[in-house]
Image (tube, rainbow, N blue to C red; front, side, top):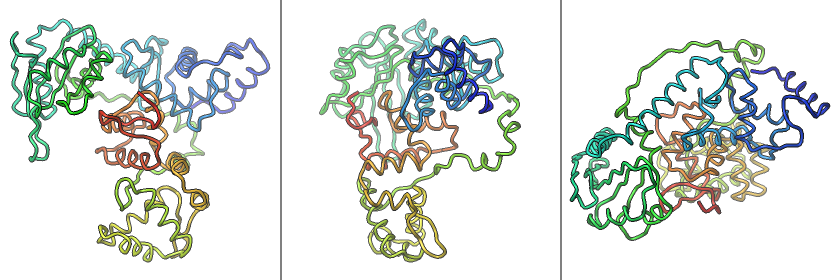
Length: 443
């Protein structure tokens, strides 16, 4: 971690000397361009937080956002994921370096570089692969993902269908799927989508997988209502899936040792560091329905404000108000939800509003709830930042948060509750493809 005094000195030099070599006075850059400039001047990878601190000190960026480090991490992460020619690489959770950086590489950087090279090699091999082999590769991937009865149809008279498969959900629903595998270098057009629909029954589902991308018309055609649903998987997503499920790729575990400089340089602050982020890691729903979290929260806070109940009384409130709540353990869990949002606290045997709780209750609007969520919960600001880039599915958001924030979430439950709370705060919505996006933004 850089000494804060060094940052202060650089800031003073910047303001005293307009030719200071750390930056160009008066020229405000985008977050990505600023990150490139900062990393070019660094001899090691940097976390998004430190990139932002240096960029602000050197006058490279201006921001009024509450979490600029989350904005920086989201933009760099999405650029690495979606841009095959990205200049950045992720060395570890929330830490980035330039692909063509200086020669002083950490072990993690070497691994990241190697993995990026393997990804590019895999991409090249997909383009050079025989069409029949490519269809077999897709079949193997579907089998690893969990599809059953995977069958390669192939041939020139397949009617637009290359592979068929079945996806069984919970041992109850069997979804028959027809798959078109396109080993293209150019984007797939809407013609392919229409051909696949014309070759299949309406009761089936469609899946188009390509090594390239999709035209705007193809995406619009796939989203058409009252037609066979078709899911699109582009080249970058295909590479992600092949690597994750180790189809055509092998993984090896390697132990990489490095000095924990942040630990050794900040021993006086270690107790504070152990507490970590002041935001809560966990959040849960409230009863009343998935669209009623805010209403239930507001009613409960009003009750607490008037009655100043004991924990037992507060638990009983949920048991009395909601027929679906039938155990004290469940009701007690609901009492803890406003505590996770820093709106309630314990005062002896009683439950009381915090100052934040009183401020929220004075104006309990969706916008106020959004502010509470951003301030109180790990991952909420990060979700909002990454959705500024593009709509994402629940699974993609889960994977992003685990990867970007190094969270040990084994299931998508916690991201799911955050998304539902944000929908209650009218901050996000679902589009026709079932992906989440910022409300009021057309993607």
